[in-house]
Length: 162
Image (cartoon, rainbow, N blue to C red):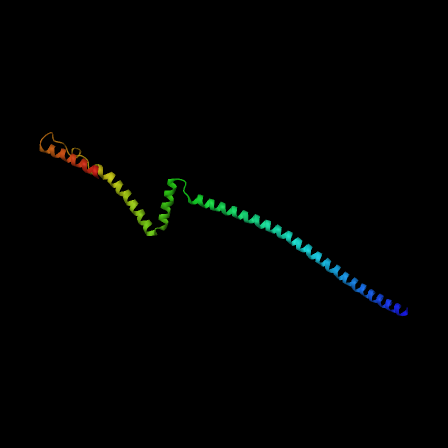
């Protein structure tokens, strides 16, 4: 019996030590579970933040695409002329921007020269191409009258060509 009590006592000691070890292990597992729960909550919170950030990025990308579409429409509107006169203006402006300053200055001088030539012609033509009858007295008959009439006909045709 004593031997049975000794074995029983050893088994109880063994079970008590095992219970203590299990209790420690349980306590460690509980601590690990708490730490794991904290980590899970942090991951969950960051995933919520991540989904919020993704939604914000998506909204910003959509807004950027809208702005880019508006810029493209405004550029198209700005570059496309609305009338033939405006088209002509853009073409002339482009050509003058491509020309060198010397060519632009020469074109200005030629245009001014044409204006002065036309004004000179308007001032001189009436006198130069006036009928002979207006420049001298017209004889009533004879060769001089014939010459005056032919002069008038020639001057009139030359004035038309000039």
